[in-house]
Length: 311
Image (cartoon, rainbow, N blue to C red; front, side, top):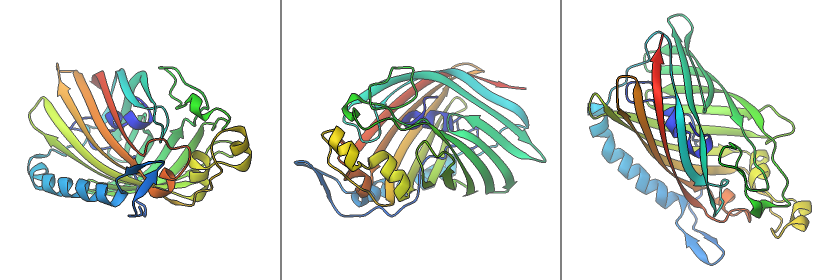
């Protein structure tokens, strides 16, 4: 599955599989209106209210018809090819098309929990007690380039960032605690060269099985990031301001973004699945105030064809 904004495809493996979508985060999202340039933008709080109302309206119906089976014991996964359209980087007014393999691998043991590997990273659900889950998480941040990137390059980039310099890729490690459809993950960057900082992700994901062949998954999430991370992706130093047309900006910690997505899976044949995902994201006030941000709200669309397997 396609990395970053299209990663919901990999996180959704049908209502028959347990959720591994850990991509959004809890934070303090200010409610004040935001105005970028001459165009006003809807506040985060207003968007959250609409999403929450929609989600609460769907919950009774979804909970009545959802299926929450865990993967079978042993090795399973899927392999395929996906394509997605998304912003060229977070906050960019431009878009890019990305094509990449759609690969997931899961191993479930009666004694050691479940280990899952995919484009969302490596997740070990070490404790699975009823609806409670405790996990260890390792994720990969591809960084960002200050030039346009190709269709097969997983790293975001845009030539409008020329002079900002590249953000090197890095690895993140963290822990997650989940109960039912709710998952909270805290993660720390391990690299001194790439993006630094700490993030916290809160997600709620509910699967809904409409038939034996067709299933949906609804997800809401929010992401909080500390000042180090916000400076890496949204800040502009004095040196960068001199090398570009952007004004200097030093963000503080706060809500990085809020997200909502709907994923779908259709079984074409016994081992073949068609996956689709539509996502909406809005940057928090601190991130949206960055001069690097040309568009606060964004959408992403992804599709993948994959073959599932089990041993």
